[in-house]
Length: 308
Image (cartoon, rainbow, N blue to C red; front, side):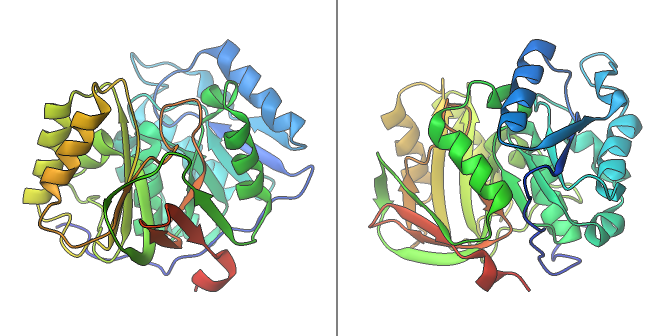
């Protein structure tokens, strides 16, 4: 049976203070240690302490340990009261394999900031759906080491502030005019598509959706979007944002795919978000109410007004 509603109402975890501890885990693929430790240094330079789960260095083929070992990293990091936030070391592949082994009720009882992107999309969306946890779509440790200045500022602000925030697109393109509000779901198109038909299929009705991907040709983007559309995932969608489609061929052709797939939907559609696999990967809150204004090329959110 597919998930049709959240088990818990959305909750925004507490912001961090200087000196707070961030836990690092690997719920998906192994990582490059040099890149990882450079990313750790970025967090330390921001004023945070870090703690590493010793199991994060395990290997099981192309995965960072067995499914249960990787799931245990997630469960234990949430249950550990000394850890105030959790950041994934890398995406890659494997996050969806841990979903059956997560303790969603315990995670709800121990809410804390959780950040990642790419393959980690599976965790961001399901933790929001099953635990009511507002998560952060943003860099993993291995990409933080080369992140641009705007991304680093957004990481620090997302971790430490509960003030209103907005993204004003420098190179925004309006594909369909209008504005809309609703809880945000943001993530990797391929990962979201592979959740279709599973018990963890995200519910997008009444939500704002932002998609990103890397290395997918336009016809493959078309195929994934069409699969999701035929599965009914876009029914009731309130608005659409298009992030970075890095190494996906001609940008105009990619935009044409989105125009075609969503041409019958009267919703605001805004392209040009610096979200995804590029140097800039601005942090946004999965599960928090946002306002998408496709005409003004802005997305805003107000944490203190949105969480029940």
